Amino acid sequence: MQVAAADPRLAKLKEEALQMVQGRAKQVQEIVDMLFSFQELGFQDWESQKYLTTLLEKEGFKIEKGVAGIPTAWTAKWSYGTGKPEISLGSDVDGIPQASNKPGVGYKDPMVVQGPGHGEGHNAGQALNVVAAIVVKQLMQRDKINGTLLLWPGIAEEQMAGKAFLVRAGIFKNTDVTLFTHVSNDLGVQWGASGSSALISAEFRFKGSSAHAAGAPWRGQSALDAVMLMAQGWEYRREHLRLQQRSHYVIKDGGDQPNVVPSTASIWFYFREQDYPRTMELFDTGKRIAQGAAMMTDTKLDTVMILGSGWSAHFSKPVAEAMHQNIQTVGMPVWDDKDQTLAKGIQRELGQPDFGLSSEVNKQLRGSETPQNWMGGGSDDIGDIAWNVPTVTLRFPSNIPSLPGHNWANAISMATPIAHKGALAGAKVQALTLLDILLTPKVVTDAWDYFKNVQTKTVKYQPFIRPSDQPPIWLNADIMAKYKPQLQKFYYDPSKYKTYLEQLGIEYPTVRPIEAKPKGNN
Image 1 (cartoon, helix red, strand yellow):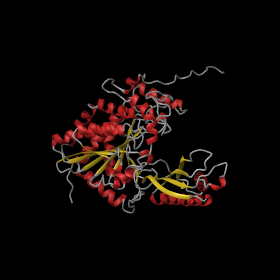
Image 2 (cartoon, one colour):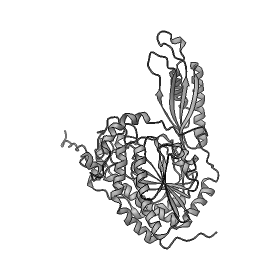
Image 3 (cartoon, rainbow, N blue to C red):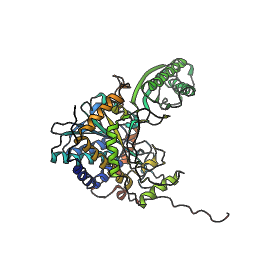
Image 4 (tube, helix red, strand yellow):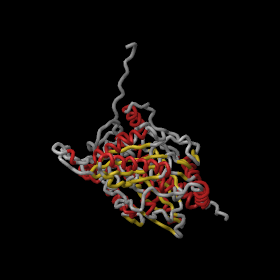
């Protein structure tokens, strides 16, 4: 079958799109700052949902809320003509516990002590997608270009508890290509094996019997003892696991008070490995250790609940190639002295080399069909979508190099000109790539050819989540109930202030002065 050549209008439309996105720089800044000010955690991002869906509904998108059994999830859809191809645009929105910090301040200075904050930078990606989609929608309407734009948020990515449920609910059943985006300190894309870890998030709940811890401890069966033995058993087993695995846990429920033998207790594990079978093997090992812990304490392993999961992603080579060309066109933002001062200030604060922000994009597109020298690492549940539809992730530069991640330090740039410029650059790349997909049928045809004949030739997707598993929508509710009244005082009001920094009265940048080094032999 012969595939139609690129539409002759493409080059001119790309030039227009660049100008139109640039014309919406103010809107990018407002969205970035607004989502930063909400500082919401996964499953509790009600303000983010209300703000973004209201904005998109005014732009003519059809809104559906509460999709996939997740109350704060949503989709925004707009179609023209035949509605094909359908392109989905996604980006995460959730924050990090105890990551609160004033933006533009290069040292620890929380807005709300121990409060949540955007210590991952998930507040910027939706601005990128929303502005790119609005611009391309206007061009599609004017020039009668067939297609569908489907926007959605990554809910509770930090818990890896959203995207697998979106897939199961059929959100992407008609999607031809997914363009995901994630904050970074560079502007780039890759194809093939992502290098991320597959993951199962599971909670093990034990049941025992209470008793007076001093008066008759022999009459109790401690669920906490079972939890602690499971944790200790895992530590002994860790020595005999592959070096590539990553596993970690927290004890969320250890009992009520010391003088009562705990009748209930639970431990929450993340099991990470390279792929589906190896991750399932870790999970099965965990279940066996849990059963052993229950036997040793005469308690019962009550439930093993999968709270979240994610495949290690594999990204589309043809789509990445198209996006890479657009990255070369757009290039990195131009950072000024203030931007570099903030970056170098926080790098010094954390004891890192103070080389500042990167200014060049990678000229060469990187990728590999299989993981190369894979040694484990972080996860992102975009993998579940990427194994169901051709997908790429656009990294855009709104954060600062050499930071620890999931930390207050990663929040400081995320409502500053660094984030505004980076998201704007990303929006330009996203808009150009949308036009490539809409007006060059070969991109979609090649993407599905790669998906069917390379990516999934020998590996077939099967979800980690079981039919009985449901989204754990109660997660983070207690934290947000505690801190939201304090956070509300800091919500951004763009009708009164040009930027969030102005509203907070922060001089940009605020960093510690460089200490003068003594001269001479002393």
